[in-house]
Image (spheres, helix red, strand yellow):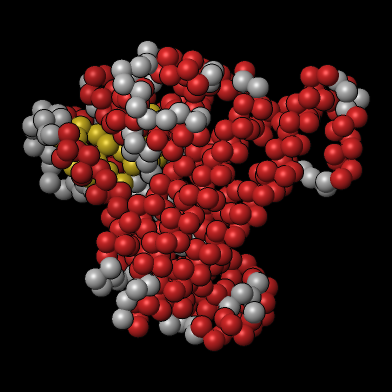
Length: 198
Length: 244
């Protein structure tokens, strides 16, 4: 998953600064800019990196520029920050909804929970190793090098590396010794297989 | 909390008991009553600025951004790092080994098999740690001290003799650090994720606590080597090359 590159857009300097302060404390996202007018919003929107816009209810109800970006840009994710309790058109889809009146614990919980949900490792189908990944893990655990694994399984070294990165991301285990222990614990290989090597 | 020279030494330990291992490295013993950090440091003949730098960075790694560390003699830093080595090998590793052995006391075959794997993994880690530390104690640190001397006296005779005996590059040594830290991390997460304890769960809690403590301490130790020691070594190396 790409990391979140966030732009914050509300009418209030103070709210913007407050949100920026909060988001900067959180890992896994970057605050690209905070803006309080349409001109600045359009300027920063040219930055291709920006993939998340958090805007206030008032802006969704009044900013033509914001609504245009929403309608035309399919590569962005959207968040709403409730500042004046006005109703926002139900047609908009928000992945994250915050309010300036809620408790600190609620705000932090929502943000962290959102980040957890979009991260690869918590996605159910992503959590477990695929058949192919298990094959590769077995060979890694048996001490084979990337090129040996490639030859054995008829795939390029590059593919082996890609699989290995995915395995490490899913299991959270970085070292070969760690992966070997995992493979033994989960009966992917037998102790006798490892002993033969030594 | 930022610790200052007027902070009471007792409060230093009360707010983070992991600093016990740190003050031990300075030879400081408990029972300091109401004495302040500067009074205790004076008593033990420890430069108070150095002490503050060490405990504050342990508490808060951001503290390292300040360049104070560059003003201390490398011998002071290396003495401290050596004592940390001693603590890892002679206190922490045996402690963890003992606890893992306790975990092995089970009749459940499945669990026993799993813990045995952890035990082997830990021994593998411990021997790599020992090798790494021995290399630091016998080659890296002596090199740094000789380099500092050469840098100060502008006389590189001894340095040249040393380099003939040991084929050594500071860069290679820096890279070796990561792998050791990753192993420790893996041991910890495998125990958390895959070891289902039966009646010996207290031992696994203790093992995890000890592993986390060792990890925290070693990370602090590597930070000091990577951010203070190595940059200073590189700077001196560059200047000496220019001079010759």
